[in-house]
Image 1 (cartoon, rainbow, N blue to C red):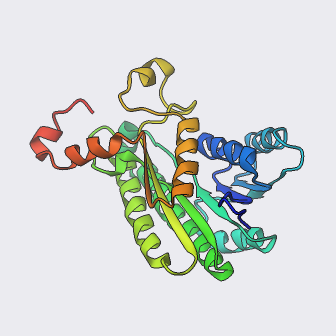
Image 2: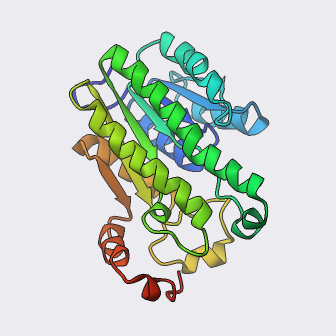
Length: 256
């Protein structure tokens, strides 16, 4: 259940080792979340993530569950068992892969894997969560999209196209959930400075980049405001509004 101020008491992180997902979990634990599920492939990293959250507050119940984005046939059973353990206030869809643009262009199988993880796997998990939340007549689904999905760039159009599909799907799902007690919030971060991304020196020079903690802060604020879309940093909304309308011949010459 949610308290009087709207703080979720239960959280499901799909992508249990995601730096953004864990930063959000840490932030919400300090705000009163009592139960956290980390869903991901079994690994020492997933176990360490759970132990790290348990260390924040001894009274928080942190559990892990085996989840594979590339096995949509299992999503209903896996997530159904999680929801059967108690009402879920908030589900954060935080899994995804960047891929390697140069490699993936030359290896269509690898490119398809990026698309299946970021789009079809996410679509499946989101629909299952939305259906389970509808059954309990309550819940928020936060979908991590990306500014990369706003307009295809030469540098990462395979990844960007998968996020574009996810973003459009999540918006439509949000419209479909209106009046059901379930809401969907789409989060569009810029380049996030994580351990898995490029080196610190490169990222430190990237304009409008952000951090997992900043995204987590924006997610919490967006939930409190009842936002449908959150940009991180917020100035990206204006930047992308301009970039979307640039002529293609001009856009492709930009150093993006």
